[in-house]
Length: 74
Image 1 (tube, rainbow, N blue to C red):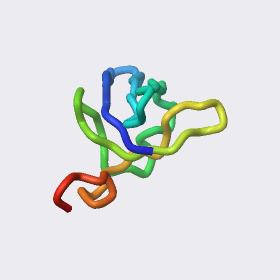
Image 2 (cartoon, rainbow, N blue to C red; image 1 turned 30 degrees about the horizontal axis):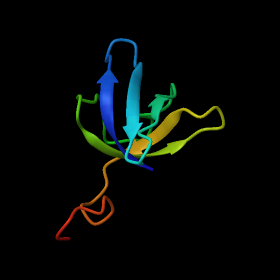
Image 3 (cartoon, rainbow, N blue to C red; image 1 turned 120 degrees about the vertical axis):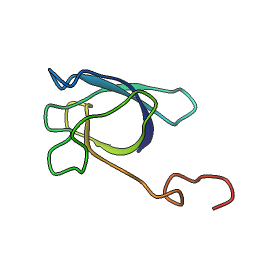
């Protein structure tokens, strides 16, 4: 999935990602959301690609290329 970081607390690792779908669902970050990622912290408004774990939490956050994010003109 693709989305945008709504909030992130670097001290606790808690955060919310909003998916880029018509209904704009929000997903809490899984505890391991940044494990193995280039991210050490996230900023509000940052675009990410992510998966959902078995509990419906955002995990495996990563950068997507503009082509992956379906940016107009690419």
